[in-house]
Length: 189
Image 1 (tube, rainbow, N blue to C red):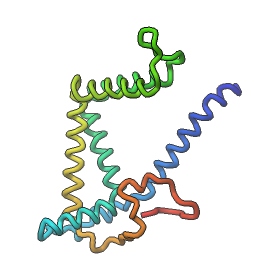
Image 2: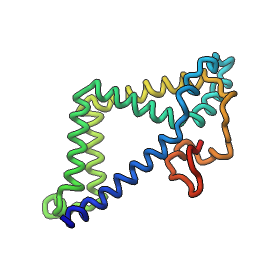
Image 3: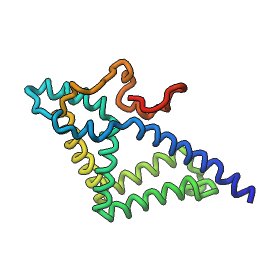
Image 4: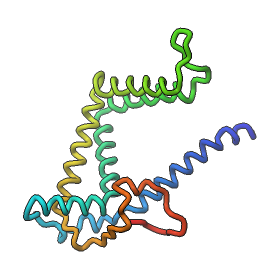
């Protein structure tokens, strides 16, 4: 029994860390009432105004846009069941090569290094996704629809009523993935 607890301890620690990181990211999202405020939409007067709005809105609503992209990709993949089958097969192959297989992988009599395994599995995965199945087109279509929705929303949403602290957002678009700083509680925008 103690062996089973010891074997699952690193797995549980990793799952707990993933859960905490996901909760931290999701806690930073903006409320839907801010996103869907009908009074805040207005057609931009010029291209430069639209790009300025897009820059501010992308920075302010970045968590919501990432979640929207994930939802759109999930919907596209669920509406194409063969994509689920192909992605499951690829995930199973990666799991077998890295987690299930205990003896070193050999081609002929030569052992394969970790770098070669990563490169080989990545190449095979890309070959299957983009050339041997329709998974690549499903994923690219999902990204396209998500980017179109994000672009339209961020161009027509007037950011004047948003509290945007530019000094707090100087770490780039993916700064929300960094862990919370000690002493900070609640949402970090």
